[in-house]
Length: 529
Image (tube, rainbow, N blue to C red; front, side, top):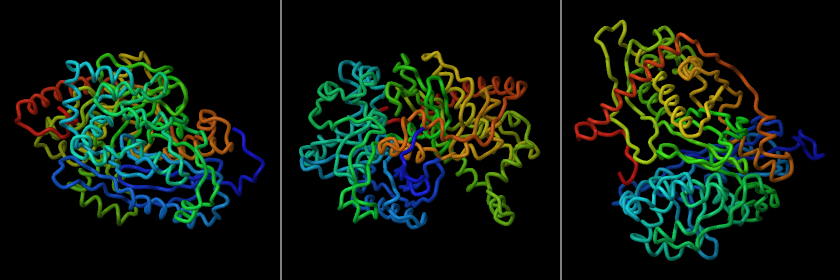
């Protein structure tokens, strides 16, 4: 890693991190230490009479982004002139459309699911072979891609569709609002299903095949390249200094792995948030013949990532805490500790395997036909000494680790890559019991970084590379990561969990059968199923 001659004490980097639920502006020093942050929640409002829709409010959300920038600068007590560069990252799948003058005219969040009918229509093209062609080229299926949403606009909002001259992702919109320049990066644009994994560029023929216009594809620029500079207009709105370099950012998960130093082939990470992602770096782009696993461009040029997703893992834990643990919440307030930490202390006294209790929440990933069983606990007993809050809490933590292990198995089946260790980050990694369970279930060492929310750090690294503060993305990611804890697997526990994993897979399959027979309600179904 190299730095310019400017004093490190007077040099900082800013990341704009646009998540599903909030926007953050985070300031880091050049050693990768967080100095300050501003955060604001945003809401994606459904359109009346459009089921599954989640509009992204461009005007209000830009104001919130500027508010966060000013808040972070104020908290850091530094002049804007010390911000050496800024970059943006965001949730994947959310898209923004612009007219011919470059003005943003429409956007939707990643959770937008209005285009279920269009997904079905696109799947039927060429006797259902179109989706396989999209997947083999881009690593994406149709359910979360941009093409069904664009087709929905063509069908239902032709006024917007006719005006659309360019499409980008939400991170690119933030960069455009700062710099006035439009471009996309491969890591985020890859989730549109319209980008070629091998060339890291658009595939206009896919839009042609879908009956869509192929003239709205913006330039592609790699993460860490310089897009432009903060304009006078953006400086006035945000408090940044006009002329500050604006770098290309990227997708939140890919930049998160950069911030964790997961930049070499074969390295593996589990990101434990509201959703859990299991990410494996692939030496070259390769897709899954069974279409179970998503493949994305990494922010590292030439590298791809296999990504599997566990649904609502963090949300499930929050539901359990809020629905059943009011006493523990009150006690934790009196003791001045986190409620989850208190519940983990209780769960640590429960034997490995949680007396056979089997949670049914997220399934392993099946990207082609993706749906879940009804949420439930199976194999409860009426023995209060065995079946209680601490048992159910431990069972949920074990189940999250089992689903992660199943997803890593699916990746290994087609890629041949089995991790020798994994990095565990995100909110889930704060739980020491959970970390040990993950190591025991997978049978491999688990490393926990000091910076657990690494997405913003990865984004700041991209800004630094764009400004010439750092040399390369990979070298900087490796040099800035610091480790807090490491866990070794217990061989006896691992054998118990292997049997538990096998049992869970069989039980889950039966539970899906209840959904198929319309006896229970699926926790979630992909659009178009």
